[in-house]
Figure 1 (tube, rainbow, N blue to C red):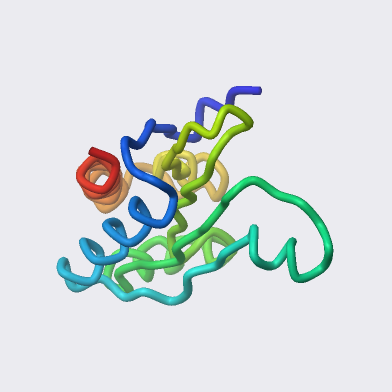
Figure 2: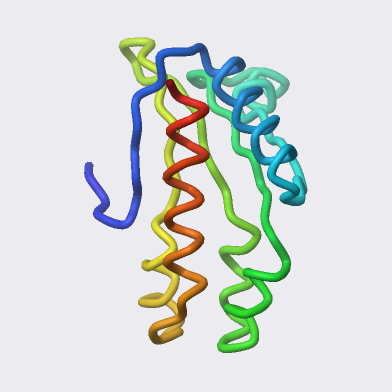
Length: 130
């Protein structure tokens, strides 16, 4: 199933290596890391199976606040999230929701910050996955 609002890039690294790289880059850029969630470990702790899957929740309050000022419901999708996971073939992917889709979901209109967020996410995820 494909979602036009989700960007998916294949990584040449393992899940841990990709996420470690991504988290390090995010911190280096001065962005705030809120949490790193390991969904596979949570599943295993509950006697369930799941392919490797981690999510990093991170952001820049200067950007996210502008969106929430237009519509506080945007807080449902902020801070931003990036997922790194394996598929059934053990290929590793990094993905994120396109910031422009937030404008659609929350009727934010044209905000320059959305373009800046999209550009930053593209560069950060490309650096982590290559």
